[in-house]
Length: 377
Figure (spheres, rainbow, N blue to C red):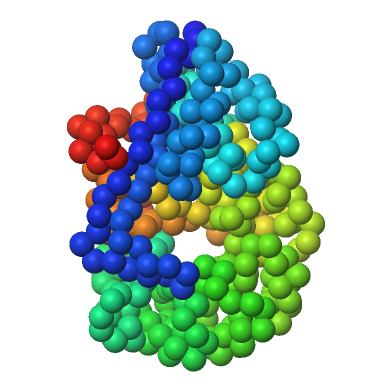
Protein backbone atom coordinates (compact mmCIF):
# COMPACT_ATOMS: atom_id res chain seq x y z
CA UNK A 1 0.00 0.00 0.00
CA UNK A 2 1.29 3.43 -0.95
CA UNK A 3 0.35 7.03 -0.18
CA UNK A 4 -0.97 8.68 -3.33
CA UNK A 5 -2.22 12.05 -2.07
CA UNK A 6 -2.11 14.35 0.95
CA UNK A 7 -4.68 17.14 1.11
CA UNK A 8 -5.23 20.01 3.52
CA UNK A 9 -8.64 21.45 4.36
CA UNK A 10 -8.68 24.93 5.92
CA UNK A 11 -12.05 25.56 7.56
CA UNK A 12 -13.54 28.65 9.15
CA UNK A 13 -16.82 29.76 10.73
CA UNK A 14 -17.87 33.02 12.36
CA UNK A 15 -19.31 33.02 15.87
CA UNK A 16 -22.64 34.53 16.81
CA UNK A 17 -21.19 35.78 20.10
CA UNK A 18 -17.46 36.50 20.56
CA UNK A 19 -15.80 35.26 23.74
CA UNK A 20 -12.46 35.91 25.43
CA UNK A 21 -9.82 34.15 27.43
CA UNK A 22 -7.24 36.21 29.28
CA UNK A 23 -5.12 36.74 26.18
CA UNK A 24 -7.47 37.44 23.27
CA UNK A 25 -10.98 37.72 21.91
CA UNK A 26 -12.29 34.99 19.62
CA UNK A 27 -14.91 35.87 16.99
CA UNK A 28 -14.45 32.85 14.72
CA UNK A 29 -13.38 29.22 14.91
CA UNK A 30 -10.94 27.69 12.45
CA UNK A 31 -9.69 24.18 11.79
CA UNK A 32 -7.14 22.46 9.57
CA UNK A 33 -7.82 18.86 8.61
CA UNK A 34 -5.37 16.53 6.89
CA UNK A 35 -6.61 13.92 4.43
CA UNK A 36 -4.26 11.13 3.28
CA UNK A 37 -5.28 8.83 0.45
CA UNK A 38 -3.76 5.48 -0.54
CA UNK A 39 -3.65 3.41 -3.69
CA UNK A 40 -5.99 0.89 -2.06
CA UNK A 41 -8.72 3.48 -1.60
CA UNK A 42 -8.23 3.90 2.13
CA UNK A 43 -8.42 7.48 3.42
CA UNK A 44 -7.14 8.69 6.77
CA UNK A 45 -8.07 11.88 8.59
CA UNK A 46 -6.07 13.99 11.01
CA UNK A 47 -6.23 17.46 12.48
CA UNK A 48 -3.58 20.07 13.28
CA UNK A 49 -4.04 22.21 16.36
CA UNK A 50 -2.58 25.60 15.54
CA UNK A 51 -2.91 28.45 13.04
CA UNK A 52 -4.69 26.85 10.10
CA UNK A 53 -2.92 28.52 7.19
CA UNK A 54 0.54 27.97 8.67
CA UNK A 55 0.00 24.32 9.59
CA UNK A 56 -1.44 23.76 6.11
CA UNK A 57 1.77 25.17 4.62
CA UNK A 58 3.81 22.80 6.82
CA UNK A 59 1.79 19.78 5.67
CA UNK A 60 2.07 20.86 2.03
CA UNK A 61 5.85 21.14 2.47
CA UNK A 62 6.03 17.62 3.89
CA UNK A 63 3.69 16.09 1.28
CA UNK A 64 6.30 15.29 -1.43
CA UNK A 65 8.26 13.24 1.12
CA UNK A 66 5.19 11.08 1.81
CA UNK A 67 3.98 10.33 -1.72
CA UNK A 68 4.81 6.72 -2.59
CA UNK A 69 5.58 5.75 1.01
CA UNK A 70 3.91 2.89 2.88
CA UNK A 71 1.44 4.55 5.31
CA UNK A 72 1.81 1.66 7.76
CA UNK A 73 5.42 2.64 8.48
CA UNK A 74 4.16 5.29 10.89
CA UNK A 75 7.13 5.40 13.24
CA UNK A 76 9.60 5.47 10.33
CA UNK A 77 7.74 8.29 8.62
CA UNK A 78 7.54 10.28 11.86
CA UNK A 79 11.28 9.97 12.37
CA UNK A 80 12.00 10.84 8.74
CA UNK A 81 9.91 14.02 8.81
CA UNK A 82 11.18 15.10 12.22
CA UNK A 83 14.75 14.46 11.19
CA UNK A 84 14.46 16.53 8.02
CA UNK A 85 12.92 19.46 9.89
CA UNK A 86 14.85 19.15 13.17
CA UNK A 87 17.05 22.17 12.37
CA UNK A 88 14.00 24.34 11.68
CA UNK A 89 11.22 23.30 14.03
CA UNK A 90 11.55 21.12 17.12
CA UNK A 91 8.46 22.84 18.52
CA UNK A 92 5.48 24.84 17.31
CA UNK A 93 3.79 24.72 13.93
CA UNK A 94 6.18 22.17 12.40
CA UNK A 95 5.25 19.62 15.07
CA UNK A 96 1.59 20.63 14.83
CA UNK A 97 1.69 19.87 11.10
CA UNK A 98 3.42 16.54 11.73
CA UNK A 99 0.77 15.74 14.35
CA UNK A 100 -2.09 15.96 11.85
CA UNK A 101 -0.23 13.72 9.41
CA UNK A 102 0.52 11.19 12.14
CA UNK A 103 -3.12 11.00 13.28
CA UNK A 104 -4.25 10.44 9.68
CA UNK A 105 -1.74 7.60 9.28
CA UNK A 106 -3.05 5.87 12.41
CA UNK A 107 -6.57 6.24 10.99
CA UNK A 108 -5.41 4.45 7.82
CA UNK A 109 -3.72 1.68 9.79
CA UNK A 110 -6.85 1.03 11.83
CA UNK A 111 -8.96 0.90 8.67
CA UNK A 112 -6.43 -1.42 7.00
CA UNK A 113 -6.74 -3.98 9.81
CA UNK A 114 -10.39 -3.30 10.62
CA UNK A 115 -9.83 -2.27 14.24
CA UNK A 116 -10.01 0.95 16.25
CA UNK A 117 -6.73 2.75 16.83
CA UNK A 118 -6.85 1.95 20.53
CA UNK A 119 -6.51 -1.74 19.67
CA UNK A 120 -3.28 -0.99 17.81
CA UNK A 121 -2.01 1.12 20.73
CA UNK A 122 -2.25 -1.82 23.11
CA UNK A 123 -5.93 -2.36 23.81
CA UNK A 124 -8.57 -0.42 25.69
CA UNK A 125 -8.39 0.13 29.44
CA UNK A 126 -11.83 1.73 29.06
CA UNK A 127 -14.46 2.10 26.34
CA UNK A 128 -16.00 5.27 27.73
CA UNK A 129 -14.36 8.30 29.25
CA UNK A 130 -15.47 10.84 31.80
CA UNK A 131 -15.23 14.45 30.69
CA UNK A 132 -15.20 17.97 32.00
CA UNK A 133 -16.89 20.99 30.47
CA UNK A 134 -14.54 23.61 29.06
CA UNK A 135 -16.22 26.99 28.77
CA UNK A 136 -16.79 29.87 31.17
CA UNK A 137 -15.13 32.48 28.97
CA UNK A 138 -15.77 36.22 29.23
CA UNK A 139 -18.50 37.84 27.15
CA UNK A 140 -18.81 41.30 25.67
CA UNK A 141 -21.64 42.36 27.96
CA UNK A 142 -23.03 41.47 31.35
CA UNK A 143 -21.71 40.77 34.82
CA UNK A 144 -19.29 37.81 34.72
CA UNK A 145 -20.13 36.85 38.29
CA UNK A 146 -23.73 36.29 37.23
CA UNK A 147 -23.40 34.82 33.73
CA UNK A 148 -20.47 32.53 34.57
CA UNK A 149 -22.23 31.15 37.64
CA UNK A 150 -25.31 30.48 35.51
CA UNK A 151 -23.27 28.85 32.74
CA UNK A 152 -21.46 26.60 35.22
CA UNK A 153 -24.79 25.56 36.76
CA UNK A 154 -26.06 24.60 33.32
CA UNK A 155 -23.06 22.31 32.77
CA UNK A 156 -23.75 20.61 36.08
CA UNK A 157 -27.40 20.18 35.05
CA UNK A 158 -26.18 18.45 31.86
CA UNK A 159 -24.35 15.94 34.05
CA UNK A 160 -20.75 17.12 33.89
CA UNK A 161 -18.88 16.23 37.09
CA UNK A 162 -16.29 18.97 36.51
CA UNK A 163 -16.03 22.40 34.89
CA UNK A 164 -13.11 24.66 33.98
CA UNK A 165 -13.17 28.42 34.54
CA UNK A 166 -11.07 30.94 32.63
CA UNK A 167 -9.09 33.30 34.82
CA UNK A 168 -6.30 35.78 34.13
CA UNK A 169 -8.36 38.98 34.31
CA UNK A 170 -6.83 40.31 37.52
CA UNK A 171 -6.43 38.47 40.80
CA UNK A 172 -9.31 40.11 42.66
CA UNK A 173 -11.81 39.72 39.83
CA UNK A 174 -10.68 36.13 39.32
CA UNK A 175 -11.10 35.35 43.00
CA UNK A 176 -14.61 36.84 43.07
CA UNK A 177 -15.69 34.91 39.98
CA UNK A 178 -14.17 31.68 41.30
CA UNK A 179 -16.11 32.08 44.52
CA UNK A 180 -19.36 32.71 42.62
CA UNK A 181 -18.89 29.65 40.41
CA UNK A 182 -18.04 27.44 43.38
CA UNK A 183 -21.14 28.59 45.23
CA UNK A 184 -23.26 27.98 42.11
CA UNK A 185 -22.06 24.41 41.46
CA UNK A 186 -21.77 23.27 45.06
CA UNK A 187 -18.97 21.40 46.85
CA UNK A 188 -19.16 18.05 45.04
CA UNK A 189 -18.42 19.26 41.49
CA UNK A 190 -14.75 19.57 40.57
CA UNK A 191 -13.71 23.10 39.61
CA UNK A 192 -10.52 23.85 37.69
CA UNK A 193 -9.13 27.24 36.65
CA UNK A 194 -7.08 28.14 33.56
CA UNK A 195 -5.12 31.39 33.27
CA UNK A 196 -3.92 30.72 29.69
CA UNK A 197 -0.45 31.82 30.90
CA UNK A 198 -1.62 35.39 31.52
CA UNK A 199 0.25 35.86 34.82
CA UNK A 200 3.77 35.95 36.11
CA UNK A 201 4.63 33.84 39.14
CA UNK A 202 4.00 36.68 41.63
CA UNK A 203 0.42 37.24 40.46
CA UNK A 204 -0.26 33.52 40.00
CA UNK A 205 0.83 32.76 43.56
CA UNK A 206 -1.30 35.61 44.89
CA UNK A 207 -4.35 34.32 43.03
CA UNK A 208 -3.66 30.72 44.01
CA UNK A 209 -3.59 31.62 47.70
CA UNK A 210 -6.83 33.56 47.34
CA UNK A 211 -8.74 30.66 45.74
CA UNK A 212 -7.25 27.65 47.56
CA UNK A 213 -10.25 27.73 49.88
CA UNK A 214 -12.57 26.87 46.98
CA UNK A 215 -11.12 23.37 46.50
CA UNK A 216 -9.62 23.85 43.03
CA UNK A 217 -8.91 20.67 41.04
CA UNK A 218 -6.00 22.23 39.17
CA UNK A 219 -4.53 25.61 38.20
CA UNK A 220 -3.76 25.40 34.48
CA UNK A 221 -1.07 27.43 32.73
CA UNK A 222 -0.55 29.91 35.58
CA UNK A 223 2.54 31.38 33.87
CA UNK A 224 4.03 31.41 30.37
CA UNK A 225 5.18 28.01 29.02
CA UNK A 226 8.79 29.19 28.80
CA UNK A 227 8.92 30.08 32.49
CA UNK A 228 9.75 26.71 34.03
CA UNK A 229 11.18 28.36 37.15
CA UNK A 230 7.91 30.27 37.47
CA UNK A 231 5.96 27.03 37.29
CA UNK A 232 8.12 25.59 40.06
CA UNK A 233 7.66 28.70 42.19
CA UNK A 234 3.86 28.52 41.87
CA UNK A 235 3.83 24.78 42.51
CA UNK A 236 5.85 25.13 45.69
CA UNK A 237 3.86 28.10 47.01
CA UNK A 238 0.26 26.85 46.80
CA UNK A 239 -1.62 23.64 47.55
CA UNK A 240 -3.52 23.55 44.23
CA UNK A 241 -2.19 21.00 41.69
CA UNK A 242 -0.46 22.70 38.76
CA UNK A 243 -1.30 21.71 35.16
CA UNK A 244 0.15 22.64 31.79
CA UNK A 245 1.79 21.40 28.65
CA UNK A 246 -0.57 22.30 25.81
CA UNK A 247 2.21 24.57 24.50
CA UNK A 248 4.90 21.89 24.77
CA UNK A 249 5.95 19.48 22.02
CA UNK A 250 7.39 15.97 21.60
CA UNK A 251 8.86 13.65 24.19
CA UNK A 252 11.98 15.80 24.24
CA UNK A 253 10.09 18.87 25.44
CA UNK A 254 8.14 16.88 28.01
CA UNK A 255 11.30 15.18 29.23
CA UNK A 256 12.51 18.61 30.31
CA UNK A 257 9.18 19.36 32.02
CA UNK A 258 9.24 16.07 33.88
CA UNK A 259 12.86 16.49 34.97
CA UNK A 260 12.09 20.01 36.23
CA UNK A 261 9.26 18.74 38.49
CA UNK A 262 7.29 21.81 37.44
CA UNK A 263 3.88 20.17 36.95
CA UNK A 264 1.50 17.79 38.67
CA UNK A 265 -0.69 17.24 35.58
CA UNK A 266 0.52 17.22 31.96
CA UNK A 267 -1.76 18.21 29.09
CA UNK A 268 -0.23 17.48 25.67
CA UNK A 269 -2.53 18.12 22.72
CA UNK A 270 -2.69 15.02 20.54
CA UNK A 271 -3.00 17.17 17.42
CA UNK A 272 -0.10 19.44 18.38
CA UNK A 273 2.51 17.63 20.49
CA UNK A 274 3.45 15.06 17.85
CA UNK A 275 0.35 13.02 17.10
CA UNK A 276 -0.66 9.67 18.53
CA UNK A 277 2.82 8.23 17.97
CA UNK A 278 4.50 10.82 20.16
CA UNK A 279 1.72 11.34 22.70
CA UNK A 280 1.69 7.65 23.59
CA UNK A 281 5.40 7.98 24.41
CA UNK A 282 4.74 11.12 26.44
CA UNK A 283 1.98 9.27 28.31
CA UNK A 284 4.37 6.42 29.12
CA UNK A 285 6.89 8.97 30.41
CA UNK A 286 4.19 10.62 32.55
CA UNK A 287 3.36 7.23 34.05
CA UNK A 288 7.02 6.61 34.84
CA UNK A 289 7.33 10.03 36.51
CA UNK A 290 4.07 9.63 38.43
CA UNK A 291 2.36 12.54 36.66
CA UNK A 292 -1.30 12.67 35.69
CA UNK A 293 -2.04 12.91 31.97
CA UNK A 294 -5.18 14.69 30.78
CA UNK A 295 -4.90 15.77 27.12
CA UNK A 296 -5.68 19.27 25.95
CA UNK A 297 -8.45 19.15 23.31
CA UNK A 298 -9.40 22.21 21.27
CA UNK A 299 -10.65 21.30 17.82
CA UNK A 300 -13.24 19.50 15.73
CA UNK A 301 -14.64 16.00 16.07
CA UNK A 302 -11.48 14.65 14.43
CA UNK A 303 -9.35 15.97 17.30
CA UNK A 304 -11.87 14.67 19.84
CA UNK A 305 -11.82 11.21 18.25
CA UNK A 306 -8.02 11.08 18.22
CA UNK A 307 -7.88 12.11 21.88
CA UNK A 308 -10.47 9.49 22.82
CA UNK A 309 -8.46 6.74 21.11
CA UNK A 310 -5.47 7.69 23.26
CA UNK A 311 -7.53 8.11 26.43
CA UNK A 312 -8.85 4.59 25.95
CA UNK A 313 -5.38 3.09 26.48
CA UNK A 314 -3.92 5.36 29.17
CA UNK A 315 -3.33 3.72 32.55
CA UNK A 316 -5.19 5.01 35.59
CA UNK A 317 -3.44 7.73 37.52
CA UNK A 318 -2.91 5.60 40.63
CA UNK A 319 -2.49 1.87 40.16
CA UNK A 320 -2.93 -0.74 41.38
CA UNK A 321 -5.95 0.53 43.27
CA UNK A 322 -9.51 -0.53 43.89
CA UNK A 323 -10.69 2.94 42.89
CA UNK A 324 -8.09 4.42 40.54
CA UNK A 325 -8.48 7.91 39.12
CA UNK A 326 -8.98 7.70 35.37
CA UNK A 327 -7.82 10.34 32.87
CA UNK A 328 -10.58 12.61 31.60
CA UNK A 329 -11.54 14.26 28.33
CA UNK A 330 -11.61 18.01 27.86
CA UNK A 331 -15.02 18.56 26.24
CA UNK A 332 -15.25 22.04 24.74
CA UNK A 333 -18.73 23.50 25.17
CA UNK A 334 -18.11 26.90 23.58
CA UNK A 335 -19.66 27.79 20.24
CA UNK A 336 -17.91 25.95 17.38
CA UNK A 337 -20.05 25.54 14.23
CA UNK A 338 -17.51 23.17 12.64
CA UNK A 339 -16.85 20.85 15.59
CA UNK A 340 -19.73 18.38 15.33
CA UNK A 341 -20.91 19.29 11.82
CA UNK A 342 -17.73 17.83 10.35
CA UNK A 343 -18.74 14.31 11.46
CA UNK A 344 -21.50 12.21 9.95
CA UNK A 345 -22.15 10.91 13.47
CA UNK A 346 -21.21 13.58 16.05
CA UNK A 347 -19.41 12.67 19.27
CA UNK A 348 -21.63 13.66 22.18
CA UNK A 349 -21.67 13.13 25.91
CA UNK A 350 -24.31 11.49 28.08
CA UNK A 351 -24.27 12.93 31.59
CA UNK A 352 -20.63 13.85 31.17
CA UNK A 353 -19.54 10.46 29.80
CA UNK A 354 -18.27 10.07 26.21
CA UNK A 355 -18.09 6.73 24.40
CA UNK A 356 -14.82 5.95 22.63
CA UNK A 357 -15.56 5.38 18.91
CA UNK A 358 -15.04 1.67 18.21
CA UNK A 359 -15.14 1.63 14.40
CA UNK A 360 -12.00 1.07 12.33
CA UNK A 361 -9.30 3.71 12.68
CA UNK A 362 -10.48 6.79 14.55
CA UNK A 363 -14.00 5.38 14.30
CA UNK A 364 -15.44 8.43 12.59
CA UNK A 365 -16.67 9.42 9.14
CA UNK A 366 -16.03 12.93 7.88
CA UNK A 367 -18.95 14.72 6.22
CA UNK A 368 -17.60 16.07 2.91
CA UNK A 369 -20.55 18.40 2.51
CA UNK A 370 -19.45 20.11 5.73
CA UNK A 371 -15.91 20.37 4.33
CA UNK A 372 -17.33 22.30 1.41
CA UNK A 373 -19.60 24.44 3.57
CA UNK A 374 -16.83 25.63 5.90
CA UNK A 375 -13.96 25.70 3.41
CA UNK A 376 -11.95 28.92 3.22
CA UNK A 377 -12.21 30.15 -0.35
